[in-house]
Image (cartoon, rainbow, N blue to C red; front, side, top):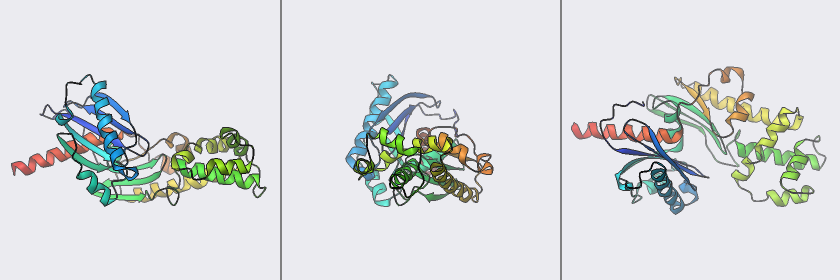
Length: 304
């Protein structure tokens, strides 16, 4: 929990590293955020060197933002939450990193998001951003729902909604499904004249590209477009299913976070929406909470 009972004078670094960016915060013993920094991708699945560089760079930027350039990285206790380290080989590789910090406490991005959302306590989170998943932490038992990756998983995510939009536009241009408002918008956005241009524009694109197309699906659905409505309702029902699975674990709180949340939340079932609580803190704060918890456990073990 966020309290001011920490007796040490240590500065804590909180890291939230994902596929597109790595965010860092510096917090003091009184749980005040002193500075923030953002750098490039922090998911080691897409490159170990890139991830470690982004972590280090974002930490330096956070110190600079805090006006603490006289503080060395070796003075920071780091909580590091990363996408990708749910894969054991990547966790081990990151854990073996000869990092520049005083201490490092490594966790998945899901755990730190959950800890942040619930102030370090038990709870569950639904994440819908570029990807999608559910995660719960109840009585020290962790459960993951989804998180299988795009395109074979991550239904109800920004990437999934964007991909479905592209597929339906192509079918519509071929006359195989009814016309959709999405067609003209997508063609104009991607500077395409016809379906051939569109195929060339989307071929071999990654999840982040498709996530950038998600808003046009919601825009069309909100205007009553039947094709878009079908996509949105299908994706929303998948997120409803994640929520029901998480709620079966009896978490004291359930939150929804991720970049798509503002667009998707209103489409969820009423009983799901009524159970959602606002996240209390950002994931990078969850990284600091995790680091504090691990430091406290270490202290207890040393004094035993």
